[in-house]
Amino acid sequence: MDANASQQLPSSWGKLKIASTVLGTVLIPLVIAYASNEYTSAIKQNEIGQRYVELAVGILSKPPTDSTMHTRAWAVKVVDHYSGVQMSVDAQNELIDEQLEAINSAVNAALEVIKKVQKVQ
Image 1: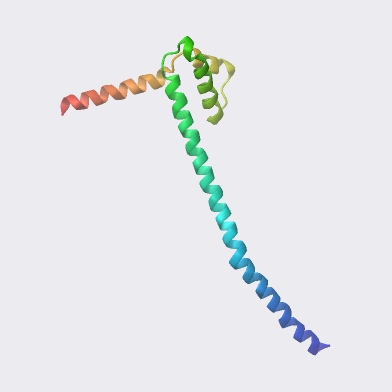
Image 2 (image 1 turned 90 degrees about the horizontal axis):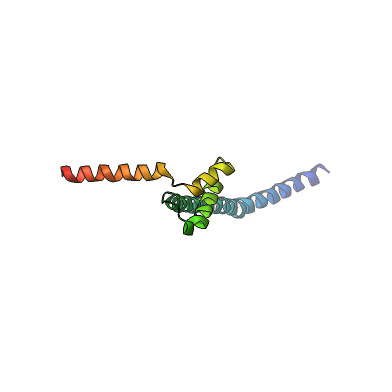
């Protein structure tokens, strides 16, 4: 029996070696490819969300009119969706009804700086 057991041991090790080779050459690259694809997809989704927020902030930074109320409501939903902190209903209504002054002021300040720099040159 000892001779028979010693012959089976290398056969078992051979099977284990074949299985580990298959795992190493097939399964690991597939897992790496899947993880890479998921990472790339997450980055693209983040970029898309960023573009939507930029569009929404652009809409909200303009003065509200009767014809833009639905668009402003959409913009508020976009900002709320991609925000890490959810807005209250009052804050949402305020953004729909009023111009987003902080952005408008920042844009105006940047334009003033550009004008001053151009005058100096």
